[in-house]
Image (tube, one colour):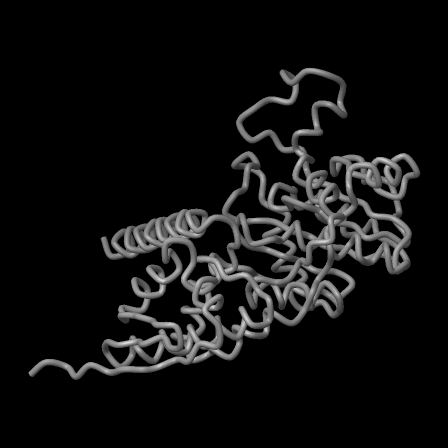
Length: 336
């Protein structure tokens, strides 16, 4: 006996809503159908969803919430659709709308910056509340970008008097000595992502003025030694490439009125094999320290091209398989 087919009707207020929901050449519609296994058709007034009960329930919840987002003036893309489907499958479809409410910051061109995932929202909430925040997760989750956004906001609100961004200049395949120019020229490539984020929020001209006044400093981590940094918003990026000693040095540099953000991806450590990551060590040592927030972002929080999320997932799965093989080999060795 075949499973019965279920049907759901979602009303549409304007034809423009359908166009924005389904996307160019129905690319969004194809994603919803492929991810939910529901069949979706429409006319000028309604969207008709048919298929198995679970497929129809999920697709209906996603479409209803996405239409509400569109009516709030939000853009809908494939990344957002897949995230909405994940939430709907978990029974958390209502949480989709939470991401439309809060504007984190504005770029220099007036573009609104909002959290795109619940993980990002939790991260921003921690940045607002805590003195020290660790933001750990894979590439593309917005760790550095959102930290810079909050740093610029804190400066504009006169909560701090300067912004300091730093990275460990660890050689990942290329050698510093072979790069042209003086020391600053040699380390600038490592700091490029920090410059890019600052340019977006301040504009190139304003960034130049604030840098010349010493309000903004972008420097390699080695420059932090021996300094006490008061009344500053300090961001340590790529912290997985800090040694334990460097991390301790950095975390004991900030003074009164300062805020500290440490970001990193523990799956991309470029340290020599005999060196332990200061980020991993700090996450264990400081896990229960009052005033410190540890926010762990995952592949679900990746907001770059959808292929980035797939790549991150593939590496995570490969790492899990490798760990399982090592565990089995240890067990076999102990049994022999």
